[in-house]
Image (cartoon, rainbow over all chains, first blue to last red; front, side, top):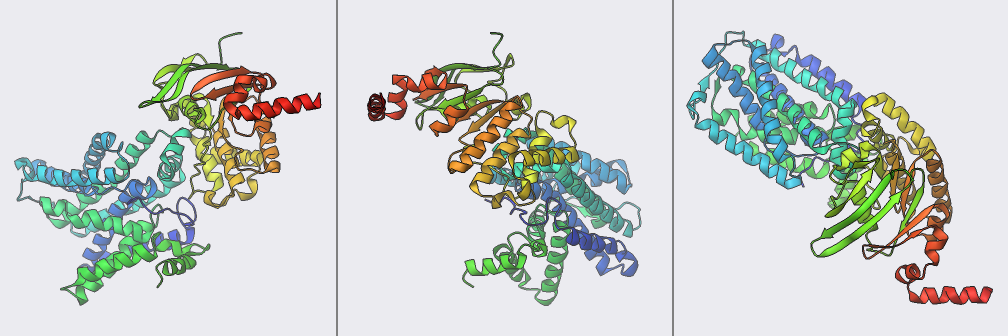
Length: 328
Length: 256
């Protein structure tokens, strides 16, 4: 089953405090990237922030609640289209307005879809979400009002770096929200469902209600990232908005960083982007092969993510254990 | 007698052709301890599942404080004041012992009035009561079997229940541990919590119960005070086997 690996030993429901501190410091430093380097690194940094936000979104439903969604790109795509439609049809240029409207659309979609499909468990939920992702892309491709297959140009008048700052704010807000949720009653309801849905129900947690809530929060984060992406990218069509990468990378990033922690998604996004860029620049022909190998190594030897290494109770021992288990 | 506190009314539970429960009725008085016994497969756990809302009975009804609860979902039954433990314990393995109990305090009967902090305080009190304070910060998966059983009880108590259903909390414990468990249940009961105890250990169930109900093959075959029920030939035969009945009779004659 593709549910997230447990957060055992990650230092409680928010994760290891030192790791979180370092990660927040990294996030704060990232706010200054456009002033230091406005070209390549700004684009790269915005990409990291976008994937981190998508990962934070996936982490709520997949990491904390234990329901692995393979369709979160739907919310990202709908968010992008919301921003595009606001500009194309109503000439609205405000990034903030686009983000707010995108989040509303994402949440509405998650509520409508979540109530039927979150009754499914395990693999069946994963398959249903994948189906929704593919179906939504097809539907959007056939609606003329949404540019059908050829897409939209989206170029509001804001200064280009504003998209970087907007993405930073969306990412930081998602991380703060995750931190606050994880420490609240809501966070414990999510984790209880992940750990054992039946036992959670017996303790008074209404599983459907909290699963749908988790998915709606997850959707809001993904949609916000999508809205900023649309403006920064300047062009939206179905393959861009519903890109497979935007569906799969966040899942890998969360698992790489540490599912069910606050810092994990950003850590995963930073590391995976760094690996991806290095491989891409050195081995342009076969970089995806190396990339795949990296994913396999992580899943086999660090199934609980990099943050697990910060755990005083045997993080490295865990790797040694994995090596032993695979007779390496 | 006034209106029954908790009543099981003609409950039947069919799984396809299997009649796990057949027309079972009895009442539970407030503040009492009801022992529910019967051979393996007699429907005890099924009945627990029906009362706690995990199963919806095929026929019949469960009434609690005058309210029909057969159709009420599990999470809502627990908020009405009926808590349970599982025979196969279900701790949240990756949460600490304290967090496990706090979840109950957050979403139980008084959960709406409690914030996260107050829930943790309540959980700490309960860990003192059940004797798990020393392992509060450990992962639930690290606990020994007796401690896992204590944790089940603490989680159920965190719901501030009026009725606590205990499904074989003493199975697998040694004699000392059983004594400790019985003390704990007596303490809980003395605080006004009504108990329904499913247990195989005859000694334990006799010492704690005010009333015993005996199930066999999904039917209620006896109900009454412990001594009286256990002396009933029908119970001895169904539950303990005919040979045991004969041996017991022989023993009694030898003593006389």
